[in-house]
Length: 249
Image (cartoon, rainbow, N blue to C red; front, side, top):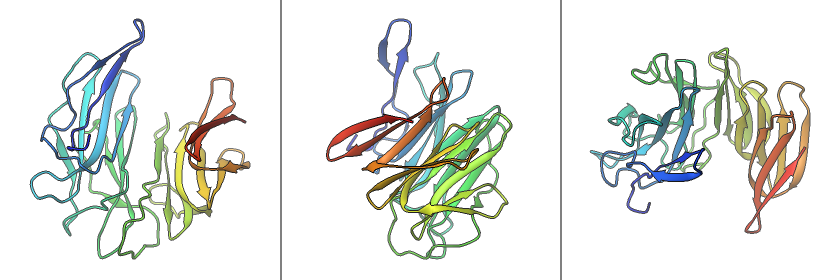
């Protein structure tokens, strides 16, 4: 909300009733940017990440977890703080989990560069390794690009990330050369077993299947998201002129 509290609700599928859980952040007003992400594993453990300004009013990467059996979130943990004070203030962090591996991706701010970094945990977030920069280039930028990218990890623990640098969309895996996918912004990636990348090129919506290399150009709009359905089709949803539009491919 506007005061900086992150609220969550849990759906009981059998009854169809949503119930409110306690707030995620355990310091009042610590998340005024409203930039957070949520994921869950196969055992109904939920993991959250967000930008948090507790203690010094500077944005840090904060993390917590809960289960479907609890109304409380864990004690919050600052997973990363930039050595120069703050991470990028207006880019949404991403979080993904597979088996015991938990990943957090965020845009950092070091040496006047706004590059993407990856935090890795092999014990579901109890501890994190040092943050690794993604990609080989760097982006010197005085302002925030407001573009956080996307992150997935599959059942074999293969990590795939997409993000924007200077108007180009890149696919990147840890310790590998990044691959340019196209031009644009607002990119995302879904379906870890057979990834789908979507993004904006100007006002045009683009989508690419990594396994086949097939690329689609859809209608005009913004903020496209895509998922693969159980029958193998792709469902896309986006915003255009105050309407929410969807298409099946």
